[in-house]
Length: 250
Length: 137
Image (cartoon, rainbow over all chains, first blue to last red; front, side, top):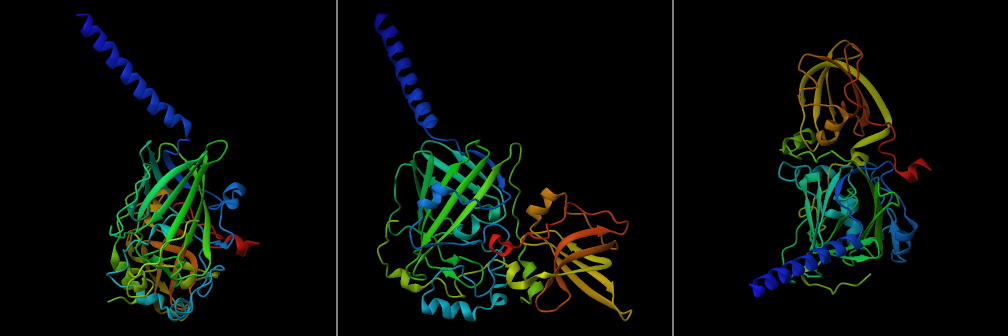
């Protein structure tokens, strides 16, 4: 009988220990969970995040709805062959029935004028975008993918906390547009993002920095901001490729 | 920022047009400084991503009927601005104000849509939506 009571108390103590350990770990870091709407303005250049950018990173001013004009790459230094390809780029050639509903990679997708939802746990953070219903998994256990893992538009992300800032490191992206005007990144682009809450917790502020030695000689960066909105949900992003028929697609 | 090791697979250069795709760009196709307003009778209304479309039969300057087309922002965005799948019905008189296509065609990106009685459909798109911070400075 005494052994049973002892075992029960020991089991309870162990459970409380582990639960409180998990709760403590979660409480140590800000909670980024929730529905995040596009912010006005869509970009906030946080000084602390800006200080973390690489010295040769140029900040692109195309967050949200604004976009760079053809031939303007915001200060990115294109490799000669990449610049030549961008100069020859015909936007209508991309507007075909089989391409009209293809998602971009997270480099372009994260700055789009669409909301996102974040689900946060100690081991995994899930970022769901309304844009093309893309879902990003951020592994918080430091586990890197095998070198032969497939490349996708969301890639493979690992995360860690630097104080109150979530740092997300992404590789294994598949090639896609950077600036939506003929400049594309390769499959070997590398992205570092930093996410933090505003002091009142109502805004989510991020920096995105990418390097791609196969296509650009310097690095690019964006600042992206969202605002918390309770009681909202992501809409479905059902895509109809026949839209491309308006641009002469066959 | 940690450097990546070079990869032979990377030499396949995913930036060729056949392998990659650019999303439909406002800056490429539309002139943010050229806004026009047209009134016509709705012939069809498509409410689907990536952009909805509305076709209007408009009376031209010489009295002949002209077909005009306006594309909208993503319906995912318009739903939050009060639009619905059936916000416009075929046969309705609609006035569209929008940014003109750069190629001079009767095609625009919708900023605002109004009914024959003057009532505005949903919340219009802001006139400076597509201007970057750098443009505005």
